[in-house]
Amino acid sequence: MLRRISAIVVLNFFLLISQGELYAQVTDTLPRKDTLHLLDTIPLGPDSLPVAPIDTTLRILNLSPYLTLHVDSSINYKLEINRVPGNYFWYLRNAPVGLKIGKDDGRLTFKAEKSLFLSGRLRYDQEYKVQMGVQNLSDPKERVDTFFTLMFYNTEIVISRLKPGVSETIFIDEGDTLSIPVQCERGSFPIESISTLTDASIKGYESVRKCDDIFTWAIPYDFVKDGDKEKQKTFHITFVGADKFYNRDTAKITVVVRDALNYPFRKDEYGRVVKEIQRYILQLKFSFKELDKNVKRTKGTRTGFDLMSGSSALAGTVLSTSSADADKNIGKVMPSVGVALVPVKEAVSPVKAYESNSAAQVRTSIKRLEYSLSDNALVGETDPEILTKLAKLRSDLKQVQTQLIDVPMVDTGGMSEEELNQYFNSPRVNKKYKLTRN
Image (tube, rainbow, N blue to C red; front, top):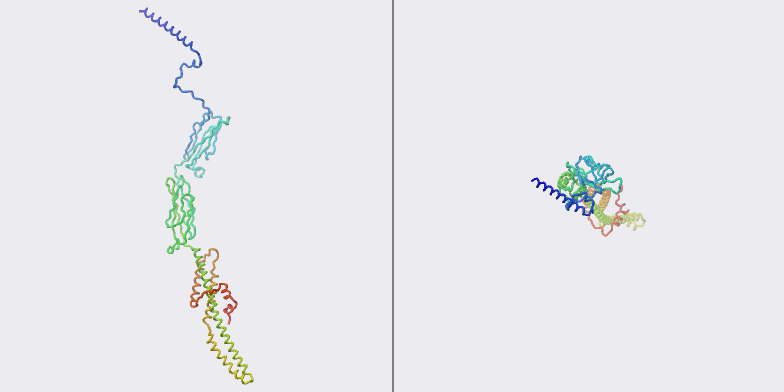
């Protein structure tokens, strides 16, 4: 048994020696093309990962493109690059107020104080595009320029307010134009739409639809009615503004419209009354001419009779002193002839007292109307006493027409205004109808 075990051991030893010699012979015969394979005893398989290339581009590793901050919060954030940071310079451009960056270490700091928003230097819900970059101090070509967006928000909602450009109560007259500018005080969310409401039926106004619009309305002269108390009418205008979340703010304006004079209409009415008076004056002047003509003809006839009567009496006196008896007899008859002419004169041309008085009255009325026109003439473009003057002209015209109701009014007879004025203002007529002392 021992012999058999020894034989097996010896046989295995020779087998191992023979296998080692065979292996050495195979490996020695292979050509050595790549010396690197001698260092790695594990060959690469088809699923092995390739070796990553070295990163040579300058990059910011931890930059967020969009940052949001709450009011009264702060930032203390260090930016990193894929380089040793000692030889690089950080910078900001177009940064909002208070935002800073460490030029050596790239530390971004900011304190969003509420006073910056109250003063208007910063705004809520507005995106600020911040330009930033990092530069290699040794190589100018190695740099990164980029940007990020910064926005501030506030959980405290401030309601936007309407701010009309007038007081709460407006007093205005008819004929004027009501103008109300509507501005907005910006809060957390701006007012996007404005509605205009009125509690009176008005037409032709321009409503307000957005901030900085102007409400305009030309007030008509007939807006205040005769039955309105104290000759004025009150109504209200309400502006309702709303933001995108339908938060509302209301502004109410009280408008008091006072009764006012419709000056253009009254001026046209004044012009019509003046023309009517001027036309009536021309009619009176022609009537005066006709009356004066009759009085003048009658006066001429009576004057002729008076001269004949006086001449007869004088001739009788002269002849009565004559030495001839025939002449004396004629002288006795001549005074009787003068006396006989008196009734003939009254029969042929009686005294026309009515025509004379009517002519004098017509002349006085004409002078009165001309003085009334001159005294009640309009002064300036808008005479505040136009109603008083218009009423005075109408009153004087009515009084004259009432006084001369019995005097027949005739047309001007084809005579022009210049001809009638020339006759009326002639020296003979003025002398005839002027006031004389007894």
